[in-house]
Image (cartoon, rainbow, N blue to C red; front, side, top):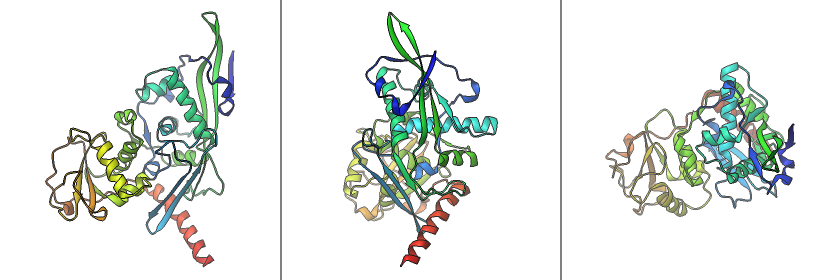
Length: 349
């Protein structure tokens, strides 16, 4: 008999032998690639480190400030970059169904096996447990943002998933009763439903992204990937720090960049991109990553679809600036709400 339990009430399953049953949800809901809304790539919406106790993102945008605040559930903590993988898979299924049927689903059924296949993750008991924990964090953390969707602002805290439940069957396997999971039912928040309903097009991620072990490199990739119009572009150290959400000093950022983004053999760890360091003090061509450069002079240049070379012989002034590929709707969701906050603040003074 098929049974259902809310994810928030699955503590009794922890430590038990839970298996995944094969389940075919039909061609209509199959996802061949995983993508994301550009707006969710431009700013930091998920914790980079598991030790983060709160998440506050404030980023300037066209003379206003975009604000995002996240509070964790005391038991599960903040949703992380790795939890975002499952979140994006749900978004991708929603977008696929929207494009196929013309209707944005309010509920999405997901099997662990299809998710693990899509992210090229080995199917193990540990992987199943991590998916369940991801869902628990995505449902239990609380979010506030001044970004609007479909003209609707947020005047209360919300969660990425409004509701999540797990379906399973109890079967006798080898003389032992086992709860065999069939699927999860996810009800995304209205904020995400509105975004997909307005525009179901997503930016696809490189398959290699889901094999990255570093959340820091994942954020570097997302910021680079959201610039989809230009094959070569530059971004300053200050702006890259702001959009990745790295909240330490520039020295620590550059140290992490050298260690995690640039491999020992000089190759980049950012899927589908070659990366070069530049200094405005010597803008004629790229410089070594370990070269001492003032923070205000440090720039990074990304070249999409190219192999990493020892250097890039191109003047910094000839390289276009990073410009995230947000559509008109996404830009409208940012500026009106932030403008109103700005006006309200000015009236208080």
